Image (cartoon, rainbow over all chains, first blue to last red; front, side, top):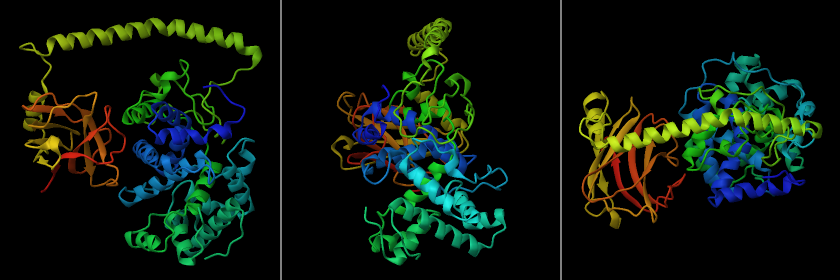
Length: 186
Length: 303
């Protein structure tokens, strides 16, 4: 497959082809998004990342037909499917014993973004930059590393109630930025 | 997608993006008609996209996912020695990353997430050198690939010619099943229950499974033989520790006679606690997720 000058226009068709059972699209999907799924899974589950990734791709094959390019990019949709599976795995899987192996949390996400990053990633990065550092830290530990509020509290030393408040306020602001609306906190 | 405006629905959606909801919360979300509102999950996914450096997935894992989906390896169409990733990162070739968790390329910042899969671009001034490198690299590995192919072919032919001979070391499925029954400490045998499906009429047999060895065998008597070009049978293993919507693929197989047929189980994922085995009829090659339209036999452990 040759590179095109309009990658955004060709991207949505991949999951549609997957939904139709196109074996080539399945291969392409693994090649294109395997790194993304793997990287997200590694931050949620250091020990069982390979099992998790296989489950995520099973979910993806089943959910591919639900992808709506008018709502999100393929990468964002796939990241959402990945996070849902990883969160769901917490029901039955034992959490990692400690948080000592967590990678360092970046502080200024927008600085590392490339010009062709997904729209959602750019909006989310800009919204993250608007948050206070402690809010940003809570959101990243929750959204990227899958830590529970209790685990974030233990790692950061913030009171549990503060962690919850930061998580809710932060995610509401990022959602508002992605939707392009201002909303009241629940 | 219309974002939920109900405060309680928003509260639950916010929680869903960060932790598993319990059954009552899921029910409540459904009752509020907000279950399909993905906005909070997409917001969290956007954060993950913005903040997660992309590493290359191990090639062996990509191969397993492809096999699970019933397609050829995604690396098969790549240039020798390259494994493309979302961000255009090149990772080591499969041979360098066959071990669990190995072969991860250095972390890269979020980059060309939306770009189509394509060869890693070269600078114009490097094109000739790059072509020469590819040619010489292929020249180096080509004899090895040919030798490996010959070896595989030879082993396959040897096995094929020896498999029915007296004294051969290759155990038949029947013998392997008996060996498993005799040797595995935790082996369980569960009888099939035939459904009302026409292909299951008069079918019987059992399934033998060892949790510790992660292997087992299906035995059928009277199951309708199939034409592999028309349809195939596929086994599904329901694991207590997994989402019941996604049973583990136990392998696609054919039945050639109404006499006793023994089929090895080839579970594509680790099965921690098998509770139910079910055989469905699927299109040739099997499916990734069964619609469960035609279930022919089931075997429930503990029933």
